[in-house]
Amino acid sequence: MHALEVDNLTKTYANGVEALKGISLNVKEGDFFALLGPNGAGKSTLIGIISSLVNASSGEVRIFDASVQKQRSKAMSFIGLVPQELNFNQFEKPMEIIVNQAGYYGISRKVALERAEKYLRQLQLWEKHDKPSRLLSGGMKRRLMIARAMVNEPRLLILDEPTAGVDIEIRRSMWEFIRQINESGTTVILTTHYLEEAEELCRNIAIIDRGEIVQNSDMKSLLATLDIETFVLDLQEPLPAVPQIDGMEFKLRDSFTLEASVPKLKSLNALFSALESSGVHVMSMRNKANRLEELFLRLVEKGAMQ
Amino acid sequence: MNARLSWVGYRTIVRKEVTRILRIWAQTVVPPAITMTLYFIIFGNLIGRRIGEMGGFDYMQFIVPGLIMMSVITNSYGNMVSSFFGAKFGRHIEELLISPLPNWVIVAGYVTGALVRGLMVGAVVTLISLFFTRLEIQHPLITVSVLLMTSIVFAMAGMVNAIFANKFDDIAIIPTFILTPLTYLGGVFYSISLLPDFWRNVSAFNPILYMVNGFRYGILGVSDVKIAYAYAIMGGFALALGSLCLWLLHRGIGLRS
Image (cartoon, rainbow over all chains, first blue to last red; front, side, top):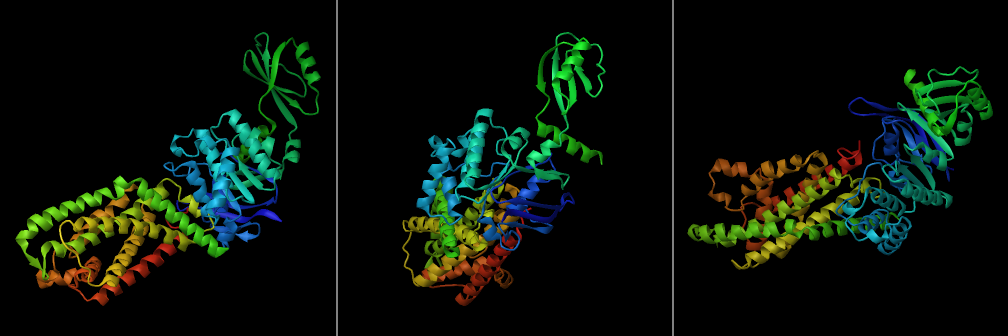
């Protein structure tokens, strides 16, 4: 069964902006799915329609076979949403926020209190459960929204930029939490600007650009299409001109930093021998970007040129 | 499952609303108590003594039902409009919009919250009035039913205002320019029998006149209007505004993009 089926979805806002131009995609039950795209691509509109906060202009969304447009109540009972913007009452305490949310799903207060404690502890927020939520740090507020989304133990968890502005240590602990949630059977849809996050966590991916899906496949096959990798080389001595070596492309960032684009099939030894014979001495080397980031930029740039 | 969902959801909204009213008691209960005490002292006691009788009662007794009703109207409306618009402005209304709760539960929960505030303030004002005059309720059933229906009507009117409001100014306009004048001209301080024919006929179009007089009839047993008209108008408004709230939530107007 599919956790999510999106069928030819369009959305044109009242101001005439065409945010979605006939999007179709399926997310399998149990999947960890990345939804990527540049700012303004239509990701948040799509999530808004899935969670019924935005009305579609045409097309249909089904969550575990329940149509959001025709069986809203049933469809909504399956999802948990962590939105991009903070959307809880900052005058309420974390415990109140989560227990109230449970009530909106018909969960008794007793069960709600137990679950609230469980998720607040798992997300390292228990010490703050009785403090006004406006006093929480940015990272804590994001984790509070994850705990709130989990209280109805949704079959489909949608996370819209959950780790934005969160430090790397907390981000990694959030990844671990979300990974465990997925392993326990919950389907997860993630949008993020940290492509490393999508590459690390997700099995399938869709890239949206200008309201259309430009890529929809599994992560492994997508990354396999990347035939060139780019490295940044720090040089021992300043380089006056770009070296010319067959089958490789170079670009000087500054006289001490060289970017080398190397076909995947070529060994790095060949790169270093060629540089050595041209009199270029390399002190250190790093990847220019992670693999998914390169693919993402390529797809989005291609869309911009068309 | 649906009945349980609706019941638990309704109780949750009411509990949240009542917690909010009690948390900000200095904004919700104290100001109307102070304002109404001043009305009782100035209009009822100081000026009222010189006015003498109105409708067969001393002036203080005559204005008490109107002042109770005035505080119920403004507080039911005010609670709904500030709480619902606050939730919309702070975006936590989304917690409800993405939930499986039916729209009628959302309306019922918020209306009950506004009703609680309206009745709470009404009770405080009634207690204060007992320091100034004696009240013998003539028709308890009419008193309670008019009070409840009025509170419900203005709570739903507040919800419509909050749904259409985009900024805080928008929730102040209707109370300032429509609700307050209609309340003051709705027979709180005078009997419309004192007015010239023209203004008496104009007053007949003011729905608040019927509510104030319905409530006054319940307490004192006198009214400027037929009590059946009062019920018909309150029932009509409750039905129309309730349907409008449900339709607005169903279409997502002002709430969903």
